[in-house]
Length: 180
Image 1: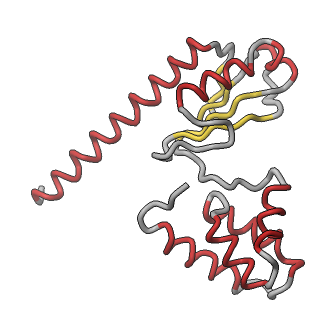
Image 2 (image 1 turned 45 degrees about the horizontal axis):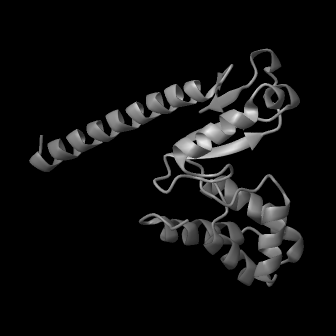
Image 3 (image 1 turned 90 degrees about the vertical axis):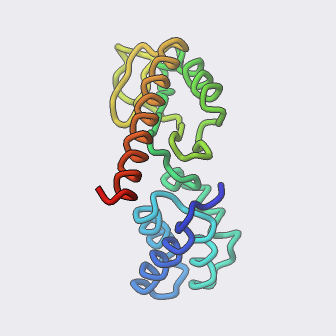
């Protein structure tokens, strides 16, 4: 995924600040990666390359570690995060169908973020709401009994919200340009 404007500079700044707090030692790799993800929201390739050089660990080892542990995300989180439950109850009554519906609608696979960074999609093990399966969590709001039609409704609602926010931002920008 390509970096947004100003993101490269922010990554360099944050990683430099993080690395100042640690000895250049391989044993610090996981805590450094955890702090980088906490600050950046994910682990961009540039951050992992910088960390690799600074603590003298081959880049392949840093990438390998980041992909081994599921606590690390390699894609930036979307503005709207969609988590599809794949616990046994949800899976048995259509969780996979809901996931595939989101994948088709967003044109991404689970674990990915849309190019505009408006949406990210992930599968989770269990939300703990088995009685309303299949369950999807959208921006920390639990949605139950999710069918493909419900996916369309949820997406329409989110897309409408994004369009409204964009219009408001454009109106604010115009007012600022006019000095109002």
